[in-house]
Image 1 (cartoon, rainbow, N blue to C red):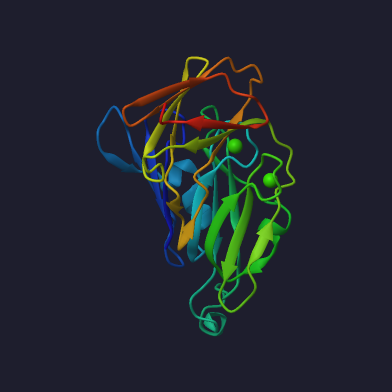
Image 2: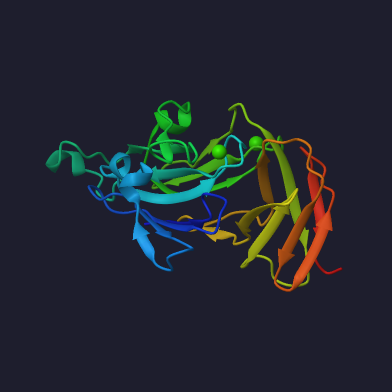
Amino acid sequence: MGLDTAYYKNNDDMAVTIGNFANEMTSFYVNRSNLGFFTDESVITGIGPKSRQALSFGLFFFDYDLDGRLDFFQTNGHVENDINKVQAAQHYAQKSQLFWNCGEDCERTYVPVEDAGDLTRLDLVGRAASYADVDNDGDLDIVVTQVARAPKLFINESEHGNWIGLRFQSQLPINAGEIKLILNGAKRKAFSSTTKSYLSQIPKDIILGIKDKNIDSILVKFHNKEVKISPKVNQWNVINLDN
Ligand SMILES: [Ca+2]
Ligand SMILES: [Ca+2]
C-alpha cells in the first residue's frame, strides 16, 4: 500500500517500490537512466520472493548501517483480523522485513536481514512506518503504527559507519525536490521529499552514510542554487540555501 522512490545505487537509476496485497510481491520498478523506461526488477533485486506472502503497508529506503548504500524496510499486516481461519498461511499480525543493500558485487542487490532484533521478531498489524534519528546518535530509528494497538519505536543499535547530517535552511520549499550532492567529486543524489511510505512523513534533514571519514567538500545543488561546504563528519551541518 505504501510507496517510495530512491536512487538506490547512488547513480542515475531510480527505483519505485510499492507495497502490495498478500500473496503479491512488493513491486520494484527501476528506471534505467540509459534506457529511459522502467523495468520490473522485484525478483532479481531479491525483494520480490521474500515479500510475496506479506500484506505490505509502510515501506521506505534508508541507510540503516550508514555504509552509503540505501537499505529497504517494509512493515506488514493483514486487513482481515480473522484471515487465519480461512487462509492458514496468512495472519493478521505479521513480521516486518529489513533488507540490506549488498551492492553491485552481490547476486541479489537486497539481502534479507533475518534477525534485526525486535524489528523483525515482533508480529505487528503494521500500517504507517517512518524514520528519524530519535536518539540523536546519527543512525536512523524506526516508528511503526498499528491498527488498534500501540505504535512501536525501534531504536537502531546496529553497528554503523560514519555519517554526515545535512540540515537545510531555505525560503524555498525544500520538502519536494531533488538534491544533488557531490562528495569529494563523487556524485550522490537524494530526494528531500518528506512524504513517503504510507500515511507517513519523515524529517526533511538528510543523513548520509559514508565510508571515508575524510570528506573535503560537499557541493549541494538544489533548484538553481549551489552551495559548497566543508562538512563536519558525525555531526549535523546546517546549510543555508538562500545565500
Ligand atoms: Ca546500508
Ligand atoms: Ca539513532
